[in-house]
Length: 171
Image (cartoon, rainbow, N blue to C red):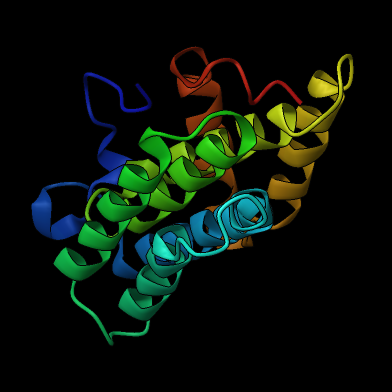
């Protein structure tokens, strides 16, 4: 579970009664795509013939460019999550990260899902005893990718939802 019971209006678009601008929604989607893509090789190396996670990342970027609809991006995200279901370890988490990224077009708050699953993928890809360090390194890398326009929003969202995101944002 990565979504809170009560939605933060800062992560709800203006047209749906929140305060999130389309520009910031797009920045969140691109950041989520970067987080997912960073760990995507963990899926692709294990399952090179399954293109669903890569497609979800490509679709959300196309949505930002106005080339696809929100529904197309969301559907691709769902297909990536389907790719994850029968997998284990780092590959599973990487596919879920891609699925969450694709879903950001529909619900901006999925941005943390992409980041959290990417951190879980990085942790799962390590040898014993290195998981926490790998997770912290991935979290720091992600924070380094945050555009200034959404940096404070995401950092605050991480603080507020860290408990429901497996405490992965303690970096």
